[in-house]
Image (cartoon, rainbow, N blue to C red; front, side, top):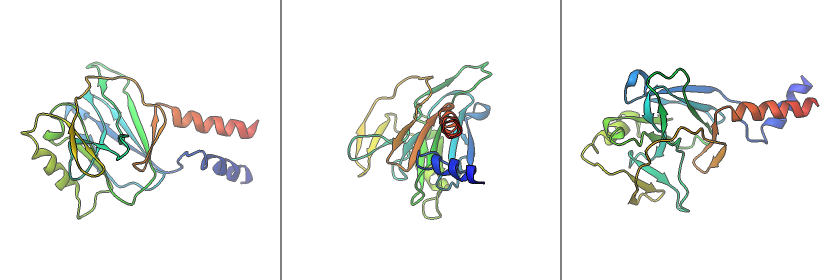
Length: 201
């Protein structure tokens, strides 16, 4: 019991979450979708996106501008997995994860592959009745006539940006002011194992 308390105390200050793991499939059955399309998460829960087909992203946006990148006033961007290409006959799949740090407001995401968001490929964390997933998806689909991808600042102003083509690298651990910590691959597990090993030795 005492050892467990020491491990928990050591992990929490290191920023490692002890919450639930929530799995989301991206592009399942070669569809333009996240499955499930929205989740309810608590502080400390980790969302793990598994890219199973085609070439998609998980990119943070806002409810007001569903198909535009979220950008903070200081110029830093919100959560973005980068493009995750999956070969047709793949047997292993890239993943991208982040841990929820703040649940005071919903988080909104989209796929920034050309045209995917406008076809309804969006995702939400903790939508509300006032700002529902269905309304968010409808707003994205209403942008179908727009062909350029843009970015939106924390204040809501838009600027045009270009999309990159593909990336297969796994995201490393970083911190975002958007209420989440990013983890790529096995970074979270390896950090936890290292912390426990340090306490035992």
